[in-house]
Image 1: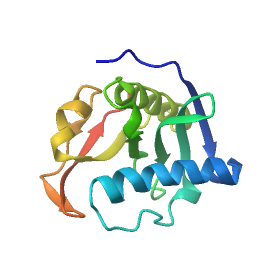
Image 2: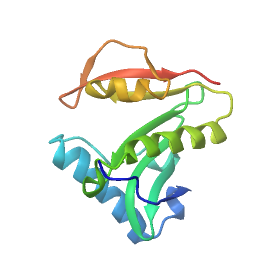
Image 3: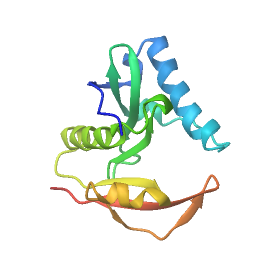
Length: 153
């Protein structure tokens, strides 16, 4: 396993990105979720405008990203679209991304539990950050998922 590369955390709303920065982030998400995972689904789902977008950057290079948001006023905040650049896998960036996403979620939504929809094979990974299953397994976009919750600290 390669050492964790140096990175900076960048958190912004969608309208704060340049066209090139936005293109890079959306391209990586499409490359990972639509192409690599062979899921034909609406990646551009209309929710990005309501989200905080977290990126791990090494200079101008996008290493990983996630989005943080509250889907409805009475819902828990969520972490979603968690993706690591294929060229940077095996460097523990997924762990770094989740740690940073939890910190930023707690800043944006203090004293609130956090939810996510995990691909079922990643339950143990998310459990290592305190997430517990709150649903049975279900299939979304031909991939088994489970809803998980991390209680407020």
